[in-house]
Amino acid sequence: MFAVKTVLPLLEPEAAVAPCCPPVTERPLTAEEAERSAVMFKALGDPVRLRLFSLVASHEGGEACVCDISDVGVSQPTVSHHLKKLKEAGLLSSERRGTWVFYRVEPSVLAAMGQLLSRSAI
Image (cartoon, rainbow, N blue to C red; front, top):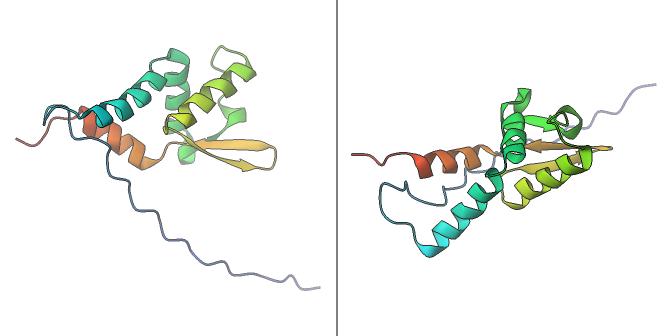
C-alpha cells in the first residue's frame, strides 16, 4: 500500500511585536506603559518564576516541555501555577501536544524587555 502524502502550506512568520515601551532613559513612561511593564516584572519578581522563564528561554530549540522543566525545587502543581502566571503576564506562550504542554518565550518578548532596559541612542 502507498501512503498518501499531504503537502501543508508554509505559514508566514508572525511579524515581531513592537516593544511595549521606549527605553526608560528616553522619556518617562506613561501610566499605561508602566502598568504593562509592571505586570511583566512582577511575574519575574519571584525567584522560581525567573528560573522557569530562564529554563524555557535557554532550552534547546527555544521551547521546553513541562516534563523537562519540573526540577526547580518545588512540586509539579507549583511549577504549573508559576508557568500559568508567566503565561498570563504575556511572557510565555504554550501549545498542548498530546498529554504534554510545551512552553516558549516569544522573541518579541525578549526584544521588548531588552529595549525597555536599554539606553536610547545618543
